[in-house]
Length: 191
Image 1 (cartoon, one colour):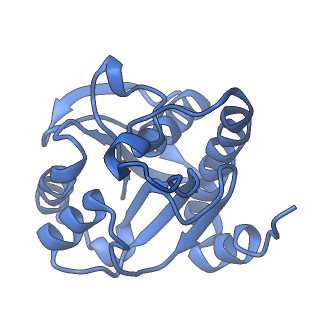
Image 2: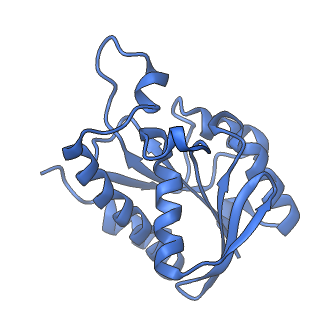
Image 3: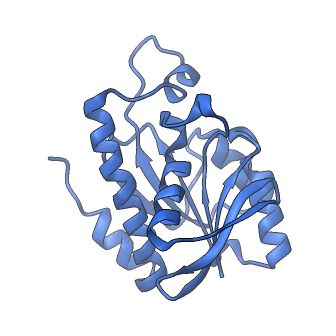
């Protein structure tokens, strides 16, 4: 069984912000695969189902971004999962342009507080991740204000495509493996 966690912040005021790419991708997977909601457990809204022949738990932590690791750790402990092979985290990345995605097998938090929390709580940085680009913050902007802000209409079109592509990438990871997904999605060049 896989735990697929999308990072974001709960509440109407955070919907469709740059920091909620993980939540938006989980919503896309829920819709595509008709994953029924199972309520709230382990500090997250979650649902269980099947994707690409694999049992999955789709989770949106309700802890707010900076404490995402609390929820992830509780799921991993409860279901006795190996985070290095059964965890996929989807989140926003300011180092990628809006519309780009990147898949990694492991890595540092890269300054992302949600990822810092997860790495700290589960004790490893060796887990799969799908990053959805939101673009670099403009000079002079506060990072928190930027990631909690919304996209322009044109950027939103790009990001909506990237959310669909991130969901596609999760399906490839589950069906064909992480290497196949990296080969397929990381090779795309900027247009």
